[in-house]
Image 1 (cartoon, rainbow, N blue to C red):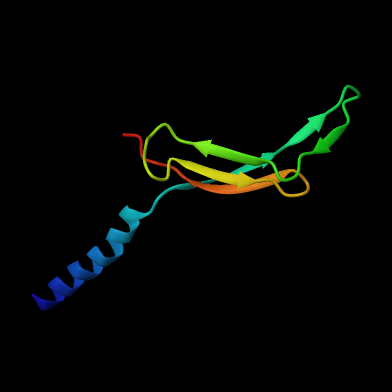
Image 2 (cartoon, rainbow, N blue to C red; image 1 turned 135 degrees about the horizontal axis):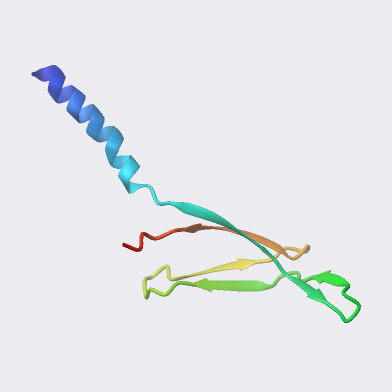
Length: 81
């Protein structure tokens, strides 16, 4: 009986963190300006604000481009059931 209780406790301790993990996705942004001759110029230090439809505390996130006009952010994907 003791072995069964230890085995069940072990399985529960492994399974609970798996349920609590949040799915994430990496978003890459590249900001450029193009002139009439189609020359591309990166946009440095552009602040991009991403906002969600929900009114939660973490409903918006900011990311700023580097000198090459690139930005990268990891977003957590909410379950929309």
